[in-house]
Amino acid sequence: MAVYSAEAVVLRKVDYGEADRILTLFTRERGKLPAIAKAVRRAKSRMSGQLDVFSHGTMMLAEGKRMDVVTQFQRITRSDGLAADLPRSAAAAVVVEVADKVLEERHPQPELFAVVVGALEHLSHTEINARMELADFLTRVLSELGYAPALAECARCGKALGESGLGFSPFAGGVICADCNRADLPSPPISSRAVKVLRVCASGDRDLFFRLRLDDIDLGALEGALEAQLEHHLDRQLKSIDFARKVRRPA
Image (cartoon, rainbow, N blue to C red):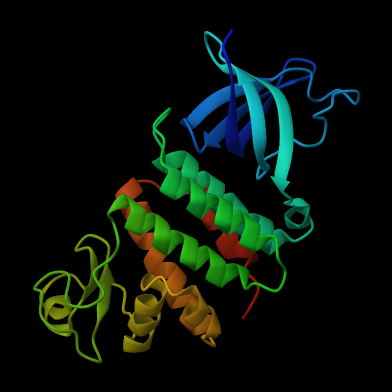
């Protein structure tokens, strides 16, 4: 069997047999792929306790007929702190589930890989606001997929947005003006302040975004718009997002 090296993040795991573990990996070099780590659940295994969801490192894999086999793993970044912090681990679960749902097997997406790795690393640092980090991640993912919401003008008619009566419509592709919101079935309302926050987040300027002082109303509006946009384009509700909503800490 041909052996190769890959930088990878573990997106999912399923225990298999007495000691094996089947993994869904997101690799920088080969995209998403299934792999098996044999005997990894045995205490004597050199990889015991390392190959878990959120794990990020360099792997040696042997190509197999049905799935590749993980033979070595060396951790690059640590994610131990996530397990002890429920809101952070819930946010990290959104990161890996989103990656799992949007990726095609064996289709490399190095830019998205960097976004996923960066989000997991940032979430492991307790000084970083987990809710803002997840919002930043969702914004970047939507941009990478070509689903970024329209924020500069009405997503339906293209006119300039006013200061009141605005709505957020994933079906239209973003924020809609008061006239369009009245003319059609009303969309969930969104304040002009929330639109400005979304614009800062979408600008890609992390330093500026993380300097914003956002309260629960601001964060809720930001999260609601981004999550609605993503789930609309995925055409499914994500279990991890539903769980993250339940365990979020107040700002």
